[in-house]
Length: 283
Image: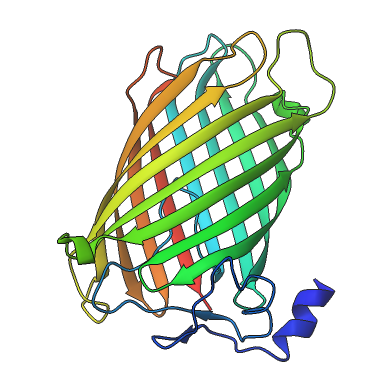
């Protein structure tokens, strides 16, 4: 926090819409971007690079983000619904590096016992590997503390590669392709047969229908195909696949609202369906 506060005195408080920003690539990773003021590249004639509901984000941000998730009719003899609310603050220090803090609160509606709830915290960082017109790639790292009341005794270390490609030059006007691959390590004492590592991957397509200055700014419809595979333990090889259709729109004053529904398409289903709602304010 001291580092962030110190940097804020020398940096702009809002992103510079930079159509003429220099290109950041792997070849100039150690030399370019580290002393540049934070800025996000604009793409007025193509698909906007944006955060979605499930896919890992591929660009640096300065934002507050609130997420709500409610899993309905969970496939469990103990639990009926699982709900999660989290608040994130992310701060891009320059054009290469970002830090974030997330506070999570989860509560479970039980079928048989008293309802359970607990909060925990996650610390994250993001490195911008590539930022050129129409293409972006970033590396994410996050550590999340245990939630022992809910039966999660592990510290989760997650690491991912996330990317974006504007498909407008290929004839798909204002369509963006988003993708991410993430590994999750569960650190701590394990019971026999419990998993210690899994991976998830996401491929998303988003179509933007309106302009940034419309009443519904950059109104976008999207679909995300998400999958998770266990890589250890008794369930090694088990894969869950979900489809998440959703909508996204700017609502003025650097604010964004998103909503979508998770629809499990693999069997057995972990739950019948899940509602996702996200609110973002950029600064």
